[in-house]
Length: 270
Image (cartoon, rainbow, N blue to C red):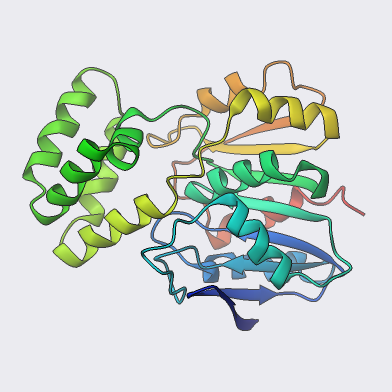
């Protein structure tokens, strides 16, 4: 494993490089994680792939300028800096929030994507709470103040849950990550940092068909955060290009014991 960094304007993006294969795979971790999470795949994929595992903004060792919006266009520029000049095609691997990043990249540059594997991917449905909190002036103001004093946020979240707008899993995850003001402000900047990565699902479907891109989606049967039904609905009409896998687990299956299975989704890529 190599730890490297690249400078983009006034920000520094950290990434880990695993393996030494001649094909490149870009890996995007989930909320609160870092690129280290993908190291579990090196023993299984390192001979034929080089994995580039980014620390997303406000995660790990990446130092992202808070005044700079993180967009897919900027991510594409960063990728150009990271990949060798002669590698214009690559694979995408994303988990949870990182799945949404991968989907938006797929929409943006489909001609460069060889294959996509998504583990419990976010981004397959419209999240009212997330959009309100990150895309509206009123929502951002409430969100910021709620991170300072979370009682208002939890009251609102419970009301939305009662109306079926958000799942209980989101509330449980929020409680887990909001034990201190430092962790709450990290949530604020991490949510804000990926707010421009919501894919257009209809356009995404068209891109998958036009460029014949194989997509594998993996879900936990008991996942209360990312519901498998959203992925199943998305893949209707895309059966020639997409594969759905359901595991007997919950949301947090990016773990060592699942590494051989995750790696196996690339076995047909000779």
